[in-house]
Length: 258
Image (cartoon, rainbow, N blue to C red; front, side, top):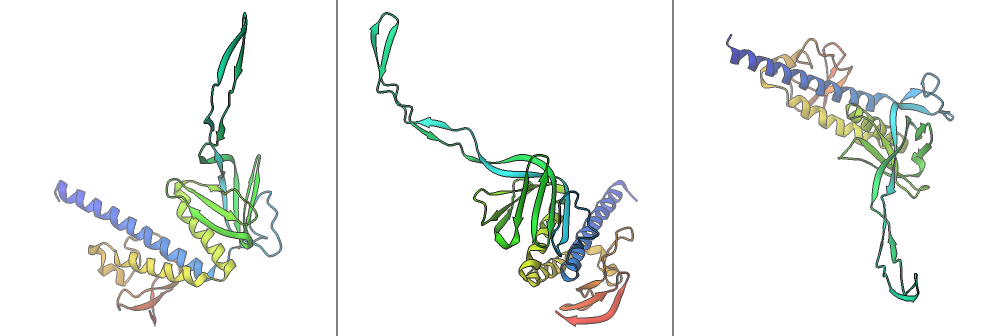
């Protein structure tokens, strides 16, 4: 095998590994959206945060940052120096001086504390060394995942200032999914997430590297070393338009319409 062939083979192996990881994660998210409602409070390690009633825990995030929108440095605009009159030796009097109007600086997303974030079935809680925050789902107005940096802004009706929490890029996808699932379960709209994840899983499955198509009829992951998806319903690799049940190790004969 020549150098070029070995390089092409390694590149293909990387592509297959990346594809298998994406598909496994999509399958895991779908399985959790269909069957999981958080970890019971009795077994969840949430540090000093006190859980309420029957709250379950969807995410515990150590090393999170508390973000608030704060104004940068401001300045005065429209001021006047006035006119200076000489009254006596070493004495001047200024007439008509105006300082102007103070203009606040632009709002900036500012890190003000670090600590732990817990997403439960009812709320998001931040507990840090200096600050605590709670965003209750019952008062939720909206939330936004930043496209510029890994943090999520959460708007609630009982707080005027927008605030949120930050995390690392490595866990961003999991943070987004767990938060959205918790909110969907709270609002009873989980079927929307399930439908979207089914579509994503189907798209990822169809994007399987071409040389591995034949293997997909026996295993959902192209590489034996990649972790297998959990049991659940996935697009049938043999019959387009149908869903087939994967028992965690192999395909079964159970099929259903799309």
